[in-house]
Amino acid sequence: MPEITPRPVKITETVLRDGHQSLIATRMTTEQMLPIIEEMDKVGYYSVECWGGATFDASLRFLSEDPWERLRKIRAGFKNTKLQMLFRAQNILGYRHYADDVVDYFVKKSLDNGIDIIRIFDALNDLRNLETAVNATKKYGGHVQTAISYTLGEPYTIEYFTNLAKSMENMGADSICVKDMAGLLIPYEAEKLVKALKATVSVPIQLHTHYTSGVAAMSYMRGVEAGADIIDTAMSPFALGTSQPSTEVMVRTFRGTPYDTGLNEEILLEVADYFRPIREEALASGLLNPKVLGVDINTLKYQVPGGMLSNLVSQLKDQHAEDKFYDVLKEIPRVREDMGMPPLVTPSSQIVGTQAVMNVLFGGRYKVATKETKALLHGEYGQTVRPFNKEVQKMVIGDAEPITCRPADLIENELPKLREEIKDYSIQDEDVLTYALFPQVALDFFKERQAGFPKKKAAEEAAKTAKEAAEAAKNAPKAAPKADAPAQIKYVPLPAPFLHSYPGVVGEAALPYIDPAPKAGDKIEGSATFDGKKVDFKVDCLG
Image (cartoon, rainbow, N blue to C red; front, side, top):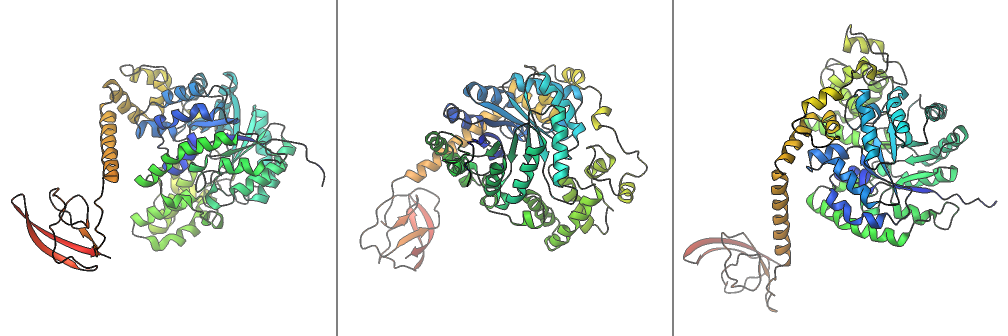
């Protein structure tokens, strides 16, 4: 076997963004991140993805945190590692297309506050939607990483993806990412795709996938062997399931091979130890649902993202129509074809899935259409890989003239108006961008900030009190049972904390001494007087 020239694979760490976004709904706080950042900076990562995606919205909406302040604090801790973000092209980090002046200024401020690499993608792979973000990133000195939204289906051939990559390189991409949001990229397809991309473009190729279908680590191996330069991984406490493959596992996998990452495994273990209690706390609170940690083979069987499947189940359950699940699964490819075969990634996956549910439940195809379906068929999201079904388009949007230009060409500059609207609340340049993306959520945050965050402080105090109470209960000394005690007593809680009078009692409220001593399996009811109060009790004796 010929000797392979050393070609170390680089690692982008996702634990501070996609790792916790995928597993705990983007709820990791800045306070939880900061203590470990200096250690992470010593690992030797190519980059750390720490911002963008859903983190911006979640910071404001659920954590009462300023996402810009989070970025500045993270930047201060990473002295030697590039920081990376996910950017939804003309959608920025929101859910609609924004004016070019907003996109340009958001890119500028992201770079000013510490981002080095901006990964830019469009849900429809419409390159017109990438233009403003790409040009702004180049203008302000950032690294442009354009991303191909990977999906399956007849139009999505190797030739389609290589043509897309070549166009991205011509736009000015410094690197190109294959963004497999659903875990659909199987190992040998990864090998073929990477080989074709490396033969087509000269910029580095990065692979991003999710473990949802169970094949991600194998796909990384074949992809790296085929020439992939960089892979996305997450520290093990926030890896697998709907997240990425484990950083430590992939580092060990390539150790001693031509693809050896060279990362410091000792420090990686320390980093994993740090994040493990955060994971355990999320499991205990229910924030981390064990269901997202498994393998969902339906992702491959139906070529539908796991998150989309769970969303369908939820919608059908709300309508008391779980029995229609397979009817909806059959309807999804028909709707997707009607809508021009878009990649099933946010927001197109939600649009296609919800419309499929409506078609099945409401007595006919497209008798009811969502506003998002109307917008997609009107051209407001951009151009799809295939033309829309003309009959369906006519049924849904009527005589409205479809948009054929770049959608943002129809949006006037927004910044002057937005600045005027928040002049009483703004304390930094970036506030206008926060407001542009999430107007009502931003206003609520600005008002809370002006007041000194009373709601946040109250919530933190309540959480601290509850945690201390739980710890106290957990560590409270328990009475040792007598050696001859035939059973323990499980109590029905009493209204006050009384003194122990039977050594086998369980809990903080004691029962009266019972004579003769109960046997395992006994059920005892009675009453007793405590501190002058008569209290009824009922116990089951455990064996």
